[in-house]
Length: 414
Ligand code: FAD
Image (cartoon, rainbow, N blue to C red; front, side, top):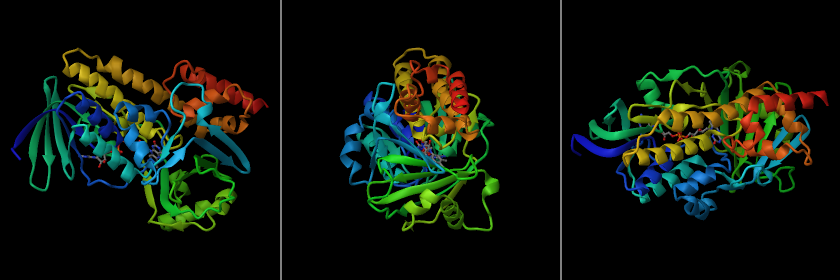
């Protein structure tokens, strides 16, 4: 390994955003170097995908591989979201949505899903280096210089552009002082995988994520994400003050599960497969999603909240958008990253944020449990839940705050 290497684009991190951007740019013939701190497969959270993200998997040329390997990797075909609150149920079928685009997707074990995408990007021509860490980055209008740490020693990489896809590692936001406080409430998630042993006649649809509102604390909720091999991911999201720190994460999770009647029945015979994990303080924001010779993708830029499973979709959309713009820039066009990248991407993120905030103040929960199959707005709400938060033909995207306020009032008046 020479001490300074040169490439067109360095991508920091090989998660979904890094892999999608790497594949798209490599297919255009650019010399791409992906630097990843871990060895794949590695655990990651974020297992329930939204149909909109399938468009970016397809743009990156990975859709056939995803369908082909879905069964052997335990990916569960997913066609919607189901909600439960104190005996009330409400189902959303993603095929019945307002927006154009795919209506189904998968629930995936991220360790093998992320490896599949990264391997496909490598086949498309991108170079991947695992167990190497980006330690420092300097950028200006001419390009970027990165210091990489590896077992063989440190070395430098220079590139025309850097895409930061480092997720919660948030490499450039930390190094370049881009962080800005998120205005979402600090919450924690406790989660693990179970062999679920759910009876075949259980009142439960494995093809949907099940989101359950805690029976007495309205801003506490659970996810139940089944995979196709009889295992499920289960987690609870809560304000930190509702966690008893004298208990282990496993005890905390089981305590919450037992507090809900429906989950208690569904998971009566479930066996925990691995220690529970706790993650908190994940909502994050930045002053800008771009700067001289760099752009931020996915969680390295903005992360809202797990509740509508929007994370991977935002990550992939940001990757596809940045890769398309960067290809044009490297080909000699002038790109206005503020107008062409930051502003359009944030529009959809803001739509999700409006719905997330309304979920926690219970307005959107009431909307969800109010929807009948005849409701004219149900397909529009379904579109948002399926990830189509950038489709401005949907009135609940175009004027999400006003639309949601009106709808919330209607539900309350009934
Ligand atoms: P990541 O997938 O985090 O990948 C970043 C990569 O960068 C990692 O592999 C990391 O090792 C590497 N890296 C970090 N620092 C460095 C460095 N210095 N040098 C080199 N490599 C580095 N999203 C959904 O869509 N559906 C869900 O159901 C869902 N559930 C969630 C539940 C919880 C509790 C939380 C917190 C999030 C959830 N998310 C969900 C969000 C999802 O986890 C993220 O949005 C998604 O993983 C972001 O992808 P990414 O490519 O931006 O980053």
